[in-house]
Length: 437
Image (cartoon, rainbow, N blue to C red; front, top):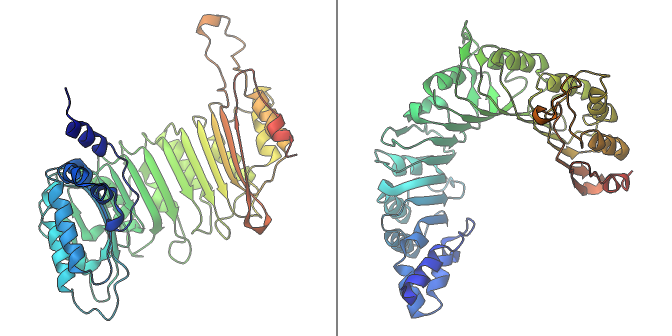
């Protein structure tokens, strides 16, 4: 038998978490306002207090500090997820205010059961919060240091044995000391060529990475002379920086091999050249089976066209999910010619083109006819088998069925039109497409 308090405690603990906001707006405090009985149960339910999202003014009130202490004490031994956000560090604040120091100390006192931390705070505050702390439960760390002049930030987290996911903004790899052998995902807003290869070597368990800006640092840096193979990397999202910071992208691709790579995103918004040959060389060298491929083209980014895209995708026959984002009206990616490759490959008029594609997503300006989209759906709606295969019970389709198409099409005046079509075997509804022709 369950008593009423047990049922209410379980109900409270299953309440959805609120989005990041000021602490006073969080749901556990609302529960305490209903009545005394609810307040007593909520205050005694640690699961309600294991998540804290805090937006802090430059000088927090001591009432906020007291509330944080109470909040964290009610969490008991629950693993904590904390998001801490300060405004930009004002120049008039030359040091750290007493209330700010008290707030950081209150959070630091519970470092032994931090699990996920997201910190958007000034660099000197990071020094205080993370200096010489033991983090036995920490798994995820996201850091966005707010720049302060004349301050060089170094972070040492050698007492975090469970830390596997790290994302860092505006900070160099060389200033971050971790147990890199445990890291499975890393994200940097900026990584230098001379940091890229050491990172790959120090993190053999790395399965995912995201480099928002890849730039060339020291002109005298010599790239490795031999190919470095990283066996574990499966997901890669890169956005290289263009001239004058990095005129040649080849070093990032020519000396590495990723045989386990299955998910690749290339964002050309900051570069002025599309490294088609370098990417083709990387994929061929790695002999990887990429299933998810995404390409992002922004206005004034790297120029490319539908022919480059076709050449690239012909080298990736394993792709099942293709995503194209193109905000440059002058660049034509998804054209009638591109769409016809699907039907022509089925009819034997062209080489196999994306034979395993199941999901196609496109965002940008329309440069195709809806009739061609409908024809593509129809050609991929029925499984096709090799002609030489007579055993129907063992036949494997040569081409996958195209399951889903999704378009987010730009229009003048900043508006968009959203079209989605789910394709079912032997049942292709082309009306949804043709009505837009």
